[in-house]
Image 1: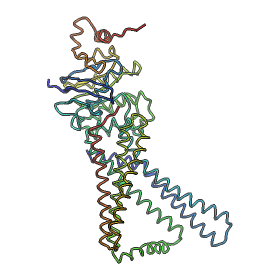
Image 2 (image 1 turned 30 degrees about the vertical axis):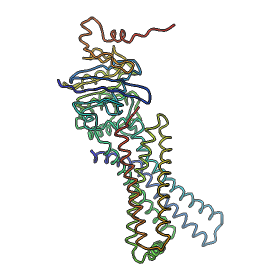
Image 3 (image 1 turned 135 degrees about the vertical axis):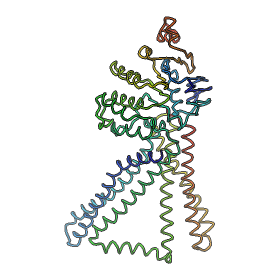
Image 4 (image 1 turned 180 degrees about the horizontal axis):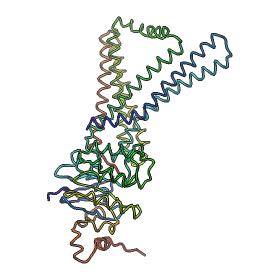
Length: 267
Length: 235
């Protein structure tokens, strides 16, 4: 049953998000062209108004991409909200599928599309930069400059890169899981205006989680870095946050499951 | 025939409001049962509890001997009083969806019934009228070979022609051994197909009886209902 749930969830998300991916890529190309045009106009001492307009367009394009990314996240969460808090919940919860499978399928598919969205953003950034720079060497120079940062890590960039990647994946899972948890509580507590309640609880859950991170950061800074900085301490901090994030995400998942299992009330 | 539904000491509260109070019921397989009562008497609450959409405050429900859960949803086909399908789905996609999730779903039968409705299977639900959407939903629910059908107000608020289609769909898809519980307050329209009736009022199960026995007393269930639930105006 999980595979069938995944099939429909992935299909639904693909239908909604594929156009968004195309928009991101398209706008990136346009922003790249505008950026290139600004560079050429500037080089040839063209009219300042033209340069201003082109720069404005570039800035708007970047804002547009940001908007599309936010809209994509909203689509993912709105689909979940619809499936548990609107009339569609009648279909969701009459399927012969366990609550755990329902939640798991939705978390997994959101996670996959979150990853795809990040990949599309990176490709768009590269593509836009390539067009704006006019040649690939400049883009590679930028990447090499960026890679220089890792020199500070004394050749251990692969280790830290992998850790950051793992942290990114776990953070994505945790954010999805925590947001779903907030939607579940919000829609269960509110009799009316469930959407508003869900948004309120998303903000509340985010606030509580940020407090946990800030509190733990204060403890770490005072206890560990009051003395000398060592790589072992840095490793501890990275893995502490990986485990903390994974723990909070998993807790949110099981709390959502428990609430839907024991307190489901579609009035 | 073994009991398909067993309800023990079931109560349901919404906040402080008691929607169902200590209901006990045993329903045998192979019957068409009318769940009858005035508006707000607890009919929908009872069906939702059996379907697993509400959590009981106390008591227990067993469908085919199993507590309500993913396993019982395999044998229960529920038609709610609202349209729950994604309006962006095409009718054929809805059929594929049901066929994927319910082992007992008969796609061929569903397609035939959809065709008899004159609905194009490629049409998206959002392009259909409310009445047609409800009929599509009924077709999906009745195309299953479930053990227990729960139909919540299937004929409420529809025109006589639609009512006829609904009643025909229910009857022609009824299979030996399956139980159908139909909640309604339009008793006259469904009386002829009922085997048994359940009267429910003010959160209590008032009476559970056999329709044939009522007819033997030269009464109709509709008349009995009016006797039991008679309201007198207060001046």
